Length: 221
Image (cartoon, rainbow, N blue to C red; front, side):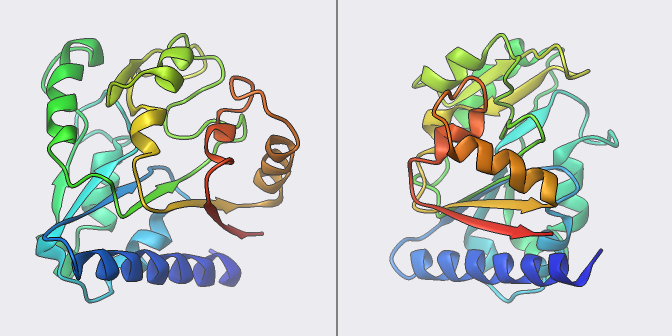
């Protein structure tokens, strides 16, 4: 991990922690929505090291692969291993999977779980793939139109470019937050973001669904 990415992760962690602290001065619980993948791991470590009233904080995911929580590519496993450590173990983590065989079977249960959280979220931390996807809003997903337009909280997603079925918070639900933050590393991601900012076709680059709202961008080379 290069020094600029480590520094960026710490800055993002401090901003998220401050947002949670501010909201907890006037509400009993605060909600943090995070993304999976390799990029946020140093951010998770930095945030876990910050002193917060973690017992009053709910954490959930922007999206998840429909795999067991013990699977190597489970975002829930990532969160449990890298964020919910030390004092942060006291946080209430809400996963997006069930024991059902498919996300279509589990989606109603997950929606009920998600809707019971302290919305609007304090912070949604988004990531972005090289194809412009964020959460599981993929350009080639058959459910992209639904995920972008529905008022439902979560959507079961099938995407030809991805090996596993997924479940994702809808764009509408991801917009229900006081602060959006986007965490990116690398020149390739910066180029994709620049392309996204220069156009308006959300289906081509779904990250565009979040560029019209205030968005704090955290990028390192």
